[in-house]
Image (cartoon, rainbow, N blue to C red; front, top):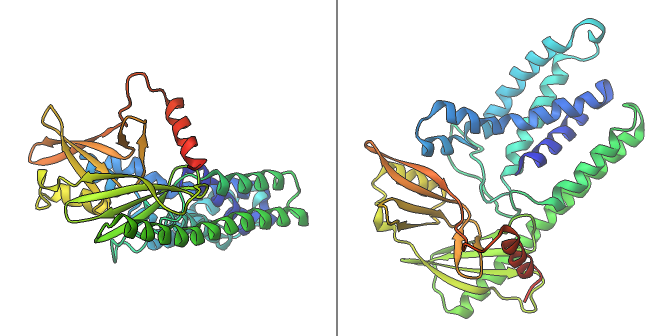
Length: 343
């Protein structure tokens, strides 16, 4: 999920591991531990000149169980050596720090598994991407109550029992909301299956995703041999059926999967992607796992790239959603909000 959410969860892990011994400093070190896996974004840019390789490095090994174990011992040892000095000598143990970093690092990819982006939890033994797709990569309903509880917690001394109660409340509320999103996912899938049957669409497979910042408006995509059929459904809709159907051609023949770079991108998108030739000869690649931005005059994929030849390989650069000249971000948000409210 987003960086703030991972910081909050990591801080909570720090409190669990060392809160009674070092107080609010445990929140800080836990937040640092919760951030470590996402440093692969910067490391990938340093290691790879090709942006496809760099992107695939994210949520790879540094988001695996093995890295959480190795990282716990490495960072636990390092921070213990730096911390256990002077007046602080003997206040903590290396085991305390190892436990803190294991909890904060491991819960990061574990939380990511619930998003549509997913994570390669079992690397290097398997590159299977675990993605349950029951919550958006950023959802304030999960993060804000958790954050508020941790902020309140900070005002109590480390041995005060109220500190533990606020921690339990934050973890409890966020966990309860996560359970709601999982149950909601099953319900949304049943609605989408029913909607596909009503539309007479014979599909090979399908997926549903919550739209950004909420678990109310959902996006469904069904794959056929040559096209994708996409639609939307809000929990506030008057009827339990997906609407706003659109058909998107695959155009996968523009770059065959025999090209290893395209094959890697296709794997990254779980094969939910479409290609389109631009006027300058480049290829527009759109990842269709996520809802498009509907401006009222068409759709533009949020997660899209421009592919171009780079020597004997394909490289890419990010592409922003294309809006009409007079369409502002507030216009898009207004359309988004209206659709959440239902129809």
